[in-house]
Image 1 (cartoon, protein in one colour):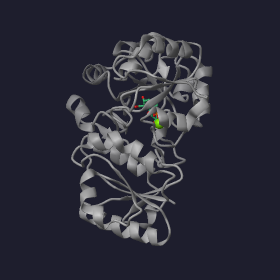
Image 2 (image 1 turned 180 degrees about the vertical axis):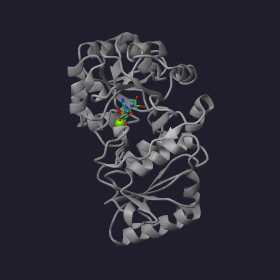
Image 3 (image 1 turned 135 degrees about the vertical axis):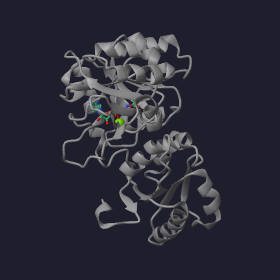
Image 4 (image 1 turned 60 degrees about the vertical axis):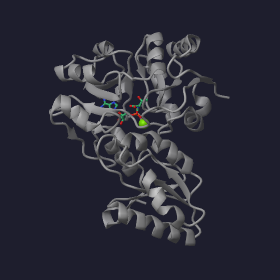
Length: 356
Ligand code: TXA
Ligand code: MG
């Protein structure tokens, strides 16, 4: 049985943190909460420990890891030099859900960066993560604590379900506040490039940096700016996700039509919808449709907070999950990105978008 220990989300118990830090220093694996999602941590300067992360997740070795540190000052030890833009961003967003890609210092192991000349670094804002990083005294490499390609974990139960016994300790501090991963920003390019939209909105970065570019979604098999940008990712296992892109009225009609069609074919249907859609659809849906309600559409933070847990609640219980696109402002950009990457089919369907 994997060891899961409850820890207070704001005032972590020192003895729990000491035990977890001890495991990290000995080369073990600890799953811990951050403000975004749960991470699977190992001592970033210990290549054998980091190798276990890849093994346990089933993650390909070409996909580099984020290195977590306790304070912005600690970033200096991992990189060649800190450009002025990084300092401005650190002052404004650290600790917080922002990961910076910078030229790496020579002693950062190649396995962490997948042989790249750059390293991704971040200072998480969760009190448990910060306490653990301080106590461990080493930088901690940590991807999201899910099986590779699966939906990221926002609760300790998700980590148990995906990785179970392969982890030495899981710290359970309840649901993570933000619910989508950090924004990954490449500062080695000019203007800086968002490799993955996440917890810090693009608009917020632009108030500090001026123009920020978005990486184009990479295609499988070609060189990718950020390997996590492979098209199908964050995906529910055992259920297909169908995503509708278009005006809300059309989406609502599509939900009703598609749910009925699928039900007539004997398939179980799940709906992943913003709050306001439920009141419109409620009495018109076939009876056995499972519904997961995210927050109000106008509050992208609420959509982000529930997104991954809602997907996990539906997966395996239904054959097809129907969802619709959400507006792009604030965290909406990250929510859209995850929905698009998780989607098997995008509607209205054109010939090139059909994936499976
Ligand atoms: O919120 C988060 O970022 C969470 C928590 C645990 O901190 N971590 C996380 O890690 O989402 P992971 O491994 O699931 O995603 C890291 C992303 C991947 O898309 C990876 O390819 C990219 O960051 N990345 C890491 N190092 C990179 C580098 N040197 N250059 C470009 N992309 C990099
Ligand atoms: Mg991940």
